[in-house]
Amino acid sequence: MWLCFSTLLIPVWTSFVSSICAVLLNRLISILLLQTFLWKRLSGGNRKRTRLNCPGTGSVQAGRAAACQGCPNQKLCAAGAAGPDPAEVAALRERLRCVKHVVLVLSGKGGVGKSTFSALLAHGLAADESKQVALLDIDICGPSIPKMMGLEGEQVHQSGSGWSPVYVEENLSVMSVGFLLSSPDDAVIWRGPKKNGLIKQFLRDVDWGEIDYLIIDTPPGTSDEHLSIVQYLGASHVDGAVIITTPQEVSLQDVRKEINFCHKVKLPIIGVVENMSGFICPKCKNESQIFPPTTGGAEKMCQNLNVSLLGKVPLDPQIGKSCDKGQSFLSEAPESPATASYRNIIQRIQEYCDLQHTQEEKII
Figure 1 (cartoon, rainbow, N blue to C red):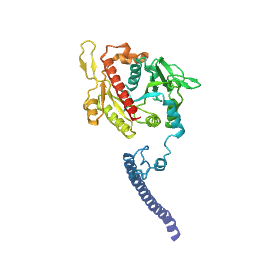
Figure 2 (figure 1 turned 90 degrees about the vertical axis):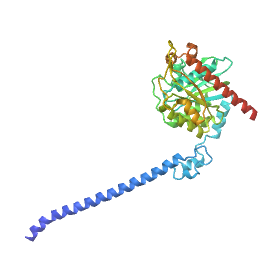
Figure 3 (figure 1 turned 135 degrees about the vertical axis):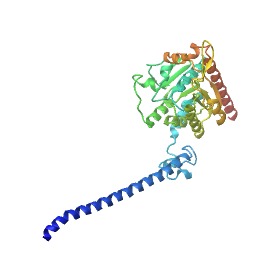
Figure 4 (figure 1 turned 45 degrees about the vertical axis):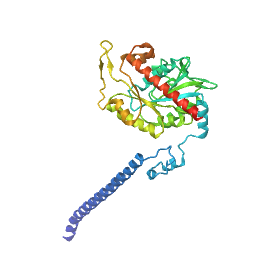
């Protein structure tokens, strides 16, 4: 009888012990998960504060400031390993010594007309036949300059002195990754280091010759390409940046970040251009706000941030048509209000660059 009772009790006892073990195991797992969660939250908070107070890789305090404690890149920044090689700096300085003025064209987001402005700025400057102008497209993943300049399908040629840029006119040359693709529809799927290598190659290996203005069309935002071009141009000279925006707040938000980026990397800001600023009817001449400036537009933002507003460019459907045909809108629609705005902005950029050059000569 006892044997029968024991036989019945064993499965019950085994089930009871298993239940207890399962409960304890679940409690242990919960405790471990809670500890992991709290550790990540605390660590994440430290990382966030570190990012916000980061002195910047170009600062003398890089890797040494209090905010650098706990940053995974602290040793790299402190060692200065991110800086360009001195031999590369010398090569870039030698190649760019014949470039008189360098202007970067930036935008906080895509679709605001940055590349269009770059192309028209190059055309406008090249209207003076005594000036040599070059347009460099470093929008690696979205090169639209070849299409806008009427150079789609052109190829880069190698010479004894380096890569030869493609010429639109005798005094206007262009270089873009689009010239290196077998088809305009080819996707460029590259990580940062490969993009940076191509940008350096454009600056170092292209035979630009004697240039009065080098216009650099950049991708939207603040990415590897922007850091690289600013770092490489530090070996030579850069006059400043022109930032393109549209009137609505969703665009201005990103422009404020772009301005902050310029301040952090010590890139001078020539000014801001408000693109698509109203539409002037060609028949009745009345102006309509297609993108209402709900927060005051670029003008109010520039006043608050103490940045120059170079001008406002109204919408003109002919601009898009000219870009698609690879023609200069400035010459195709000379009477357009947008053309007048562009010419006024280009003149202000020229005046800024000339003033910079005069001040540098006085220092020398």
